[in-house]
Length: 263
Image (cartoon, rainbow, N blue to C red; front, side, top):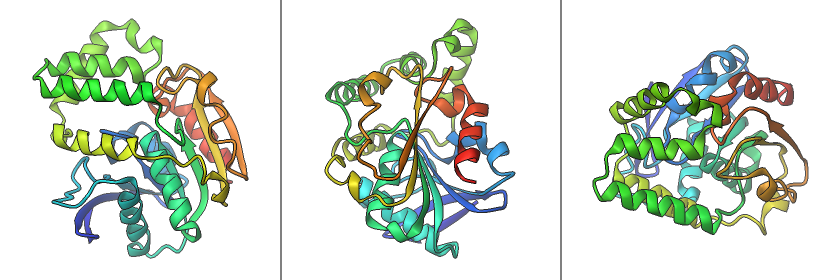
């Protein structure tokens, strides 16, 4: 657990394990702790770098702008601070956009790239969805109910077979001491809504693994499976029995795919 003062912010990060360095970048409303289902397995093979993005977790961005470009610069500074010239980079959802930004603005720092349920541009449907979720939060809605609604977009259908489990998961999320504030949720939403990499994908030079989830209703496979096709050196794999949060729904298959690719 450590803090790096960089780019006018206090960047919180953790490192776990040993081996080739692997930077894990969380999605919107999530921080480094969101990788816990896969940390034990991946840390046996890699030195994991787990930062909290601007606007999430224990990172303090003070009055600095929350943009995907700025978050990418923060993580590039962290790579340098840790003494690495190049690392593997894995980003989930919004973290995938941040990972693409690093690959575009600091290509020399990226060894291999993994994009997990990521897109080059946020769909209009998803922008409306997340703005509505923000409005509900700001209105003072019961936050246990709010998390249960959010979970419907994140997890595979089997997760909801046990209603008690869903209720307990929502209460656990609500009690998280570093839960994201409304203002920071809004700031990250603005950041990801502004991204459009469609005309820049051909510039990504890293070998890239694109992971999608079979049961993802947030980024349905039928709609996004060709979104990242313009990345030159890329392969795609579908993780079965998983929704948008594929590393939670099927951590074993997720880790197996990562390990096979990063040989």
